[in-house]
View 1 (tube, rainbow, N blue to C red):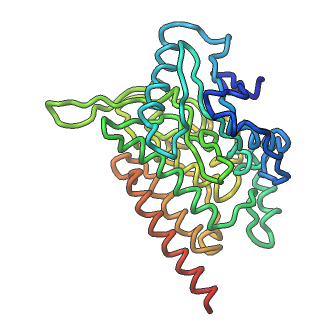
View 2 (spheres, rainbow, N blue to C red; view 1 turned 180 degrees about the vertical axis):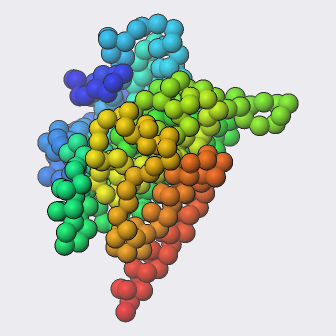
View 3 (cartoon, one colour; view 1 turned 90 degrees about the horizontal axis):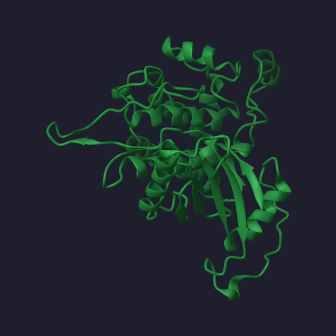
Length: 328
């Protein structure tokens, strides 16, 4: 059954696969009435009920060339997912053939719960909405935002710290994370990923060129399309934090990619309402990390490991504050 599609692939669900689960587990679970904050609540509830005995087949759309380059992209994704099987924060792969991969079903579209509608708004709309106090466009608590940010950072650290070499995701966006029924986030979709080469003579990783940057979610150096490394992921991770905080895209007042490109090249960053720093301890710390991710110079940007360490400490402090407030 057809589910959905992205720019490159169609996604299909195949149900009742006896090789995924033994017969005794193949019984229909009751469809939960729980709301997931997504656009397609009914479909999501059905997928949650069926996910344990299903798989998703991602196939290259017919509008793209079935050539060597496309094959290598799909093969690269399959190799990365297979090698990252050890990580609970990366989507599980079941198989790969030519221009398709078969993966586990992750039923909850996280982006739909994070970003409101299309993610854009005028300055007048936001000023009116926040006139009597900040009202983010999503419904997460500050503690939930903190934990989601940590899970995202941990999955990027799994890639950047892979024992056999640095893996750059190269397409970090909120939509790349899906949510399992247990509430945890899983990173998927590696068709743009880059496995960095290592220079044995210089004893360092080689910078790479991924072509001209498109879209409005890129790091500034991607528009020069050269001398890139894993820090491009961290700049975009900062954009993800912005979406968690506000429920909007980083440059929410324009959908013109060209305008955004010029702003980033000119070192102009998204507007951050200062009231978020005072709204909660967790959100203040998220802004602090976001600004470290948005450093214009990649060498001054925080790493995925820095982000994980920082967020884990914030989680500890957040828990201590909650426990203290409860005991008092």
